[in-house]
Image (cartoon, rainbow, N blue to C red; front, top):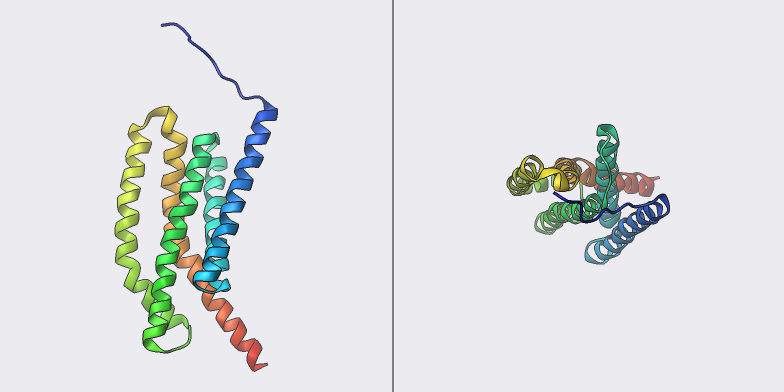
Length: 184
């Protein structure tokens, strides 16, 4: 065996990559907020962005907890996680909007609960299949794909959780807050 080449990323380049990764994530979240603002309402977009930001922070926390290196592959996995989790959140929000139109009721806990129950089988099936694929990458992908696969595995779990238990309760909280404010 012979060494053909070696690459080293110095601290200056590493800091630049880190700042560009953070900016790319923030720009993607801002773009999604604007998109959801036009597609739904501002609070839907805000709730989705908060949930996705939660996903990224928790996934990065797991990297820190397990002492894993954050490379460009991990940044790509985090951006993939942002899109994946946002899609799952949009599916739930779309069902909430359809349920509101069909029932001609105001947003409340029961409407959100019914909507989540209607999308739960889809969410579990899609997340489960993606999870199995990501675990396969984690086990058999080797050292090069380890960080990418770990971010996907952690992100799928956290993203599925946040679509149901973070984003939707924010909608209910905001609606209840506005109702109390209007009454006062």
